Length: 197
Image (tube, rainbow, N blue to C red; front, top):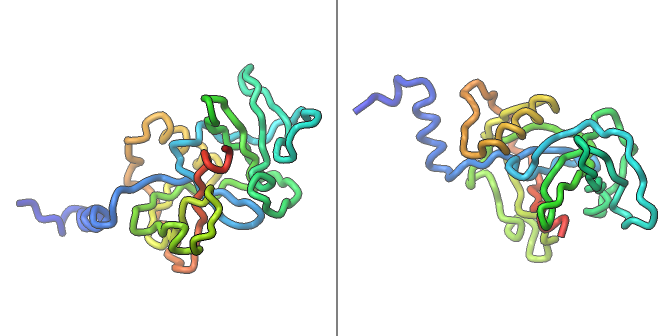
């Protein structure tokens, strides 16, 4: 029987198995608060190009953009979730996701923060954390105290999102850094399909 104590990371893997399956989440800022969605739903992260406004569009629709010849509707996720709108900064990004019926949608966010690996033990169901009267688009609350942060820059987060979307089952290398272990860190996990539906 192999000695797990001698293998680098052997004990950590054993503990990780006890906490349940691990899912990667892309963390982003909306109205100065951290939110996250499964990386597998994000196809690409873009710097916001010039938007073409759409007359008489719903309030949450900022406009349309062209991505490699394909027209993409861009929604302000802050407006969609009825959050405070800050003026756009150079850190703002557009997350390309698949909407209903296979349509590609762009979601405008204030900033991409990081990609976290979260186990079931680090995710609290929304009803438990916030009570029974919770918006249907809130999937849960994450407390990533011991989560692995896979990427901490927008470029690295975009690369990690593309890698995970291309091969969701593939694990990122062991060079990942540990996320800050601040027990007060709380991330609201979104169900993007419910938020866009």
